[in-house]
Image 1: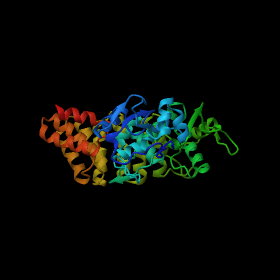
Image 2 (image 1 turned 90 degrees about the horizontal axis):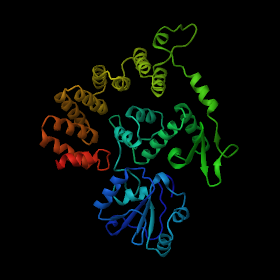
Image 3 (image 1 turned 135 degrees about the vertical axis):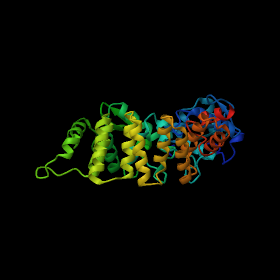
Image 4 (image 1 turned 180 degrees about the horizontal axis):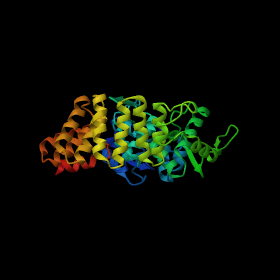
Length: 405
């Protein structure tokens, strides 16, 4: 079983659609959704659940977060009774992604049906939405598809996002994570998602890869020392105050390009200096002219600063520059709702659905706003549509509760 996307199967391999006859035990941490949501989907498929493998268990599913490296390792994690059942062919062992295939969430060709928008992925990864967008922009997260600027992520990216968050929590700087991923890509070009597919260990500020022989170090074995790299990265970033950016002397130093300023703004956000980041986004607009994406990023930063009216105007500007920008329409609606302008928020959400009728988040927020306005029948239609599009969403339970009420 690979640590992302792959499966180890043994015993009897259950064909698609046969889960109704299975008694399933989930082992380890799931990457694609919460254990509660997975259990609910399994029960809906007609299968029964065991808290742990027992004599009646016919299928063991290993979560991708703790997936063994191969079939033998998976079997070794089972109790003696389950190992005997596996050897006799009455017990199958599969990985999480194969379970999603059995449940119909992922096609056998690995084309994801259940995909996650940035807010959904942020909720599952324990990060904020603007951070998820930065990781996507840097290539750390890979979108399966994109609809009118809106990226959709497969469940494999949930594990990657959680891993990035763990690395940052462990003390690695964003610059160090970027250098680590670049180094891994050079050393292991066949690995598409190193943070999901490799066993990564952080010691201090060093990133190591765990393989069968232990922690991989230098000389054919990978070991990255990012302590010095962190200091070099932090000191070499060309992040200057706004007045310095606008008053540079071209005879002494070259001007920053609009893209340089966008990069600096992202670095400032990583450092938590949102005010300076907003100034850098504004400077990028001054240097490069109006851009829908830059206005959107500035609006996000202003929202995080609590400046809702200013964020509202920047979202409006992003939409004026690109009417197809459905995420800007959605976020505008959220800001309008927070400002108490619920009727205008409904119009913004409906505008997003005009351009992208399958936009799960727009149905969710529109349903909530219609509930607030007391338009319950209209809200119910959007709660139902949201559940059709995103049954594994972190907000699916809320939608079911609203419909029951």
